[in-house]
Length: 191
Image (cartoon, rainbow, N blue to C red; front, side, top):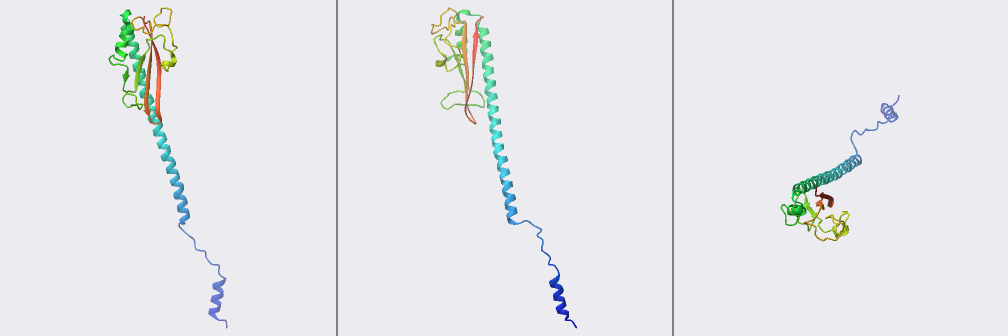
């Protein structure tokens, strides 16, 4: 008669063993997943910083452009109003936008900080010297040129005789990406 215990042991050994299944994640899988998520979050954060910087820069540029355009329009309006006094046309403009004028030749622009060392963001330079050069003015104005219509470009002060008055409007501000600048040359004509 066969031994029941021996048979049972043989049957036990002949059965295939079941491999235990893991229903969770290993520590390495969790670390890899966390690393990928962290890299993704860092990429999104850096993109957000860049987008905010670009948005701020565009906002500053728009603010400066609007202020520049307002000054240019006001210069044209002052030139039209001053046209009534031909003998002092350029002098009347200088009384408004000259160094001692009211409002003067330097302006702050709300929301913009001037360059380090500059007292203001916006400046207006009225060119009354026919002998000034573009290099001296640091702008492409087309100088020297005859501003009073006498056929010569030799007068150093045409404030009382000017028929053409170049004005340089500059905006210089400290932005998120460093010092920014825009400028525009305006030619005021006496009619």
